[in-house]
Amino acid sequence: MSFFLENWVLFAVAITSGAFLLWPLASSGARAGSLNAAQAVQLMNREKAVVVDVRDAAGFASGHIIGAKNLPLADLEAKLPGAVKNKATQVILVCANGASANKGVAIAKKLGYDNAQSLTGGMGAWRAANLPVEKT
Image (tube, rainbow, N blue to C red; front, side, top):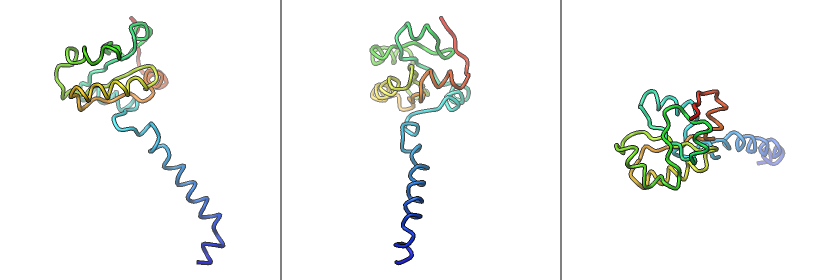
């Protein structure tokens, strides 16, 4: 017991460093149903995932993932079943920074799209990864 009392600073440092190592897992990057850009590309290539951009028309026109469908978040509940008929399809929802896409995932899952996921960081992360963007 005296060992622990004499070396309490070392134990405090160890616990603090462990907390910092685990922080990324507990933060938004490890949210259930979120993908990074590389994982999204793999789903698009291997599983033929459908990319749904939930930004408004102006945001979509300014640049979007190649092949993405534009379904603004306000219209998602009404238009998603018509745009993606198979509910088993992998669906990747994208917005400007990831926040609206997470709301879109909740809507998609409510509609029965169990394989819906969001792109963490949205189009900002996609561009930061130097992945292709098309403008309309």
